[in-house]
Length: 253
Image (cartoon, rainbow, N blue to C red; front, side):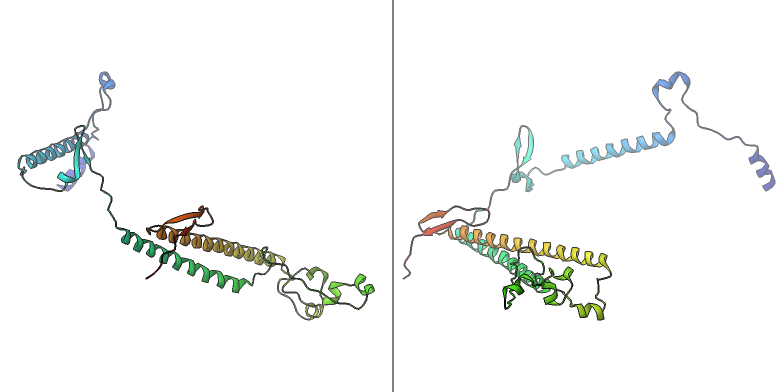
């Protein structure tokens, strides 16, 4: 029986789905059953959704309350949500919020100042552009020695290392010990780039700390302006400073 089935199966034809007839090519591809199934399922799904909504509307209680009744209004035949009203705050509540803002900004400023001090301690401000140049005065006995004064010979170092304000080894050190970086110029350049990057970060942190200090002053000024005392503006507010007011002196009893 099994051999008969195999033989019968080998004689079967490969059945292909019918394509669109030539005179109906203008109508597009011929719809197959799988295409019809998808279209039918989508149609029935939409019909069931509409039926469920229709049933929900018929069974709805007209006296039932829901929040959208008071949170929306009819505008040009369309329901539009109302904008939430701004919460009214007392002067005392505003002062408390200002105080909290000042404390938060001041906390961030103090944390930034500590980071700045830590970076300054690590870098020692070596080769900083904004650092004041040190002056080293050498005293000699006569004008002749002044004219023939050799700084490299006096410091006992190589002429190439005279301009360096740090890590200036003597000739004896150069002869007896191998200085790291002397034979590795690429390492020296890499360290210089890293040092420059650290100075850039330090400069950015200093600017950020100054801006936070200005923000604290401006918030404090706005808080002081909430008082009912008479005041006169002495200086306008700028980007780098807060406005200055002169308040009427009030005697404390």
